[in-house]
Image 1 (cartoon, rainbow, N blue to C red):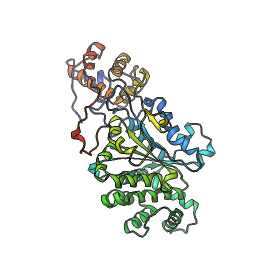
Image 2: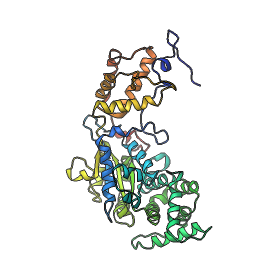
Image 3: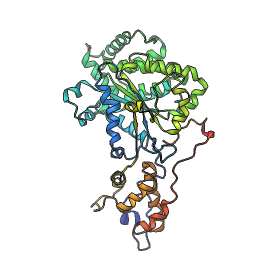
Image 4: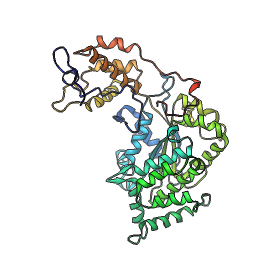
Length: 439
């Protein structure tokens, strides 16, 4: 139980005056998958619908080549790095929501007919390059996205178990031998792809397929993340992704999107194995079935990331450009704009504040202890950057509590808005640091 700080008149300032259990705004609002925070999709404005149209609706409208190689950007000119615009949160959270029902609710939201909803299930995975977890190559990252999908919730179970049920419903199965029947169906599917060069008798590959077909999701995910070593992931990781994509096809799912975060970290690592890794990347994404026709790859991008990859992405292996300034790329890029109007700022602040309101009657003003004019002043001072907006509100609340301010007004807030930093300077000393940077 935390201590209670009283004002001079004996009141608990946070709970009795500000009507909050505690400060809802973190000192550093950097996205963390284990502590994701409050998700507010309204802050993405028109780019939210754009996100779905470009990366899901248009691909699903195609019969064969559904693949998109695109990016979620924040190229905002008021920020040198374009960080803090909610790119990671958007990719991560929407993937979870898609996986909850194979995208059905999302398609209905966009007025897709019920028959098409039923006939077009899809999935999404999220991954990031993280040295602390030995995720330093594309195959390793995408394998982590596979694990993300498998353990995502789907109804009352997880996606892995739901996929098994879909397969069992589609094939002839003797009771008690479901896993063996799924194994045979997957092997048959894999053999239809002549360009898929996978040694199915390789011990690690065989174990992966066996665990994929059985019903112990925890054992399967642990095998992916901990048993398959970094060297095997780097050399054969894409083979496991191809196998998983074939597994999806057996389950009647013909589209999946992989969201890839922190690509600049991969760019720094790839310098050591440049030619090999890029060749694997190009061939596996764009030239190997079933992945090349059913899997999209969407990267989190900002100015620093583009600076890191542009030397090899466009030129070395002729991968599709991710530059948002080129009009030809607009069908594959979503450029987040941040908080573009007062309403978006108010929605974001109110949603965070609501999560820390004490039980009992609600305050008439949903932004309390802030007035709308203060929220707008903070939005403008942070140039609409959602992360800095939330952090600034948190710092204002901390200062108000420390000063025992009964009322947080513009006179108190204005001096606190003058020191906002537009960006965090980036130095060459960070080049070799592969730990997750702020997004």
